[in-house]
Length: 434
Ligand code: GUN
Ligand code: ZN
Image (cartoon, rainbow, N blue to C red; front, side, top):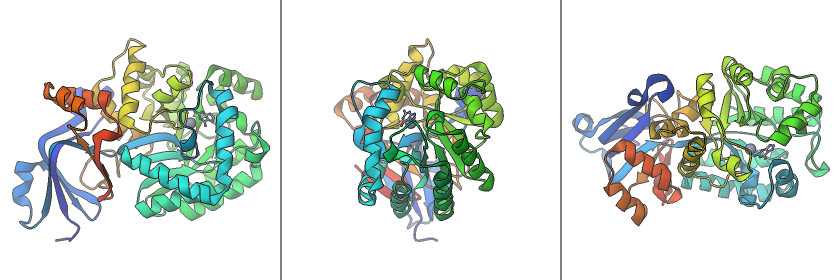
């Protein structure tokens, strides 16, 4: 028996399907008194404690949590590491927000020591909030991505990141060229993609800050490196959309710009997609592309309300993103609280099982990682969180009134935040303890 074998006994809940596809009942598995067995960083068994305990060696270490819920680690499908220090910047919508706050903040990442310091803060913040996998924007500087990957490697996290490609419509101090962005991205892919649990994403910031030549280079990188991701922004803000139409008059619309440069595909993730037409949803769907739904950001920047029912209708893969620093929280629990309100404002409901799906398995599917993370299926990486039913006096009192796991989960997403996360495990190792 492996010395690293360990078992965790608690209420356990995970998503096994999209409620929009398989129905609510079949979308989750719940074990009121469950057992999760971990071996060499992987999940080796999941089931009812009464079934599994008798099958285990007598001397196995069993950690027993009372008043807690184990779920898969959360998956953040869109976040900016260099914007950690500017979260909560006042008063602007997207384009002015970028010029006033974002670009000056990202400038600091030319300094590797600064990037190293923020990488530590950023990854600790993810783990404190129960996020074990993220798709991350770096800055334009390759050193920012080196700093982030070095720290993620040390923590053995499953993480996808890339250097921003940006060769126009930004300050000189923050632009690369089509050529240098290609060369620098390629070197980063060679250094990091597939190393441990790390993956690379080719990351053009958004259509307005790349020349056609640079977008063509991004497409070239994807062709030359199958398995690498593509990560950008799409249709977030109405002024931005008009700007794209002016910059690329030959294209049918915003998504068509990316399509023209062959940037759509199964490993392509587009943040926001707040103002998509049906044809664009259809195109995202048929190419297997994904959208990151970022409710706190969309509300904070006044961008608009993401239409989740439209995405479901066209079977577009959707994950959940915090989009820090436009997003106002690292917590995907808190992000789900805002997602629920975004749906309410459109006369729609976000069921707690769909919320769990978005924050876990849906994110894993958007990132094509569902055979590794996003659920507690045996064989998956042992990335999971322990949520504390007694994290605050109000949560404890409210959950005493709960009629069952659906209500409990809904309350966790309504009242929950970093305080709710008692422990976070990555590859079977405890990486955060509250
Ligand atoms: N569009 C282009 N860059 C950004 C960014 O940094 N944040 C957000 N929310 N949208 C963008
Ligand atoms: Zn963003």
